[in-house]
Image (cartoon, rainbow, N blue to C red; front, side, top):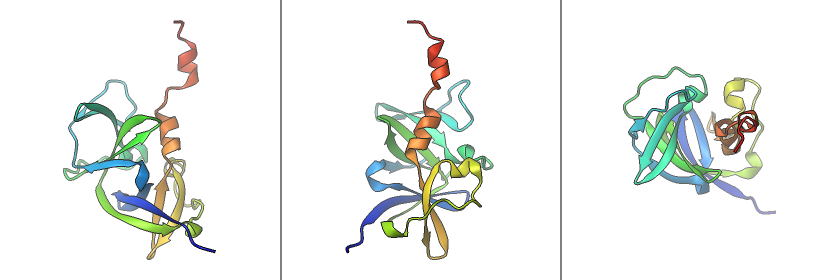
Length: 154
């Protein structure tokens, strides 16, 4: 029986390592110029112009209820979620790692619920955890609720 592997782009938020499947990452960039959006949730940092394409900037520190330190070296992981371009604002970028899928584990209960609901599972790597970000959970957080849609009469 052969082992299957998954490649993940890794990044750090508040000292914790996270990863996204490489195929979901369009590019990694420096700290983007973000245009704020009035009345948006605190984790929506605003909009970013990526060479003519508009992306929603999501602050993962804010999403995970971490202190919002203004780190000048913050980076951006650009990916597509449900056909929309999203710029995930992270503290720093790690490496692309290859992990054995058989070593994938469920999310430990010790991870706070605010973070756990956006995590698919974890890999143990050299004494550290690599938490795999659940882009579908993030997409549902970004999409408007059906209650808001039902009030519209077009």
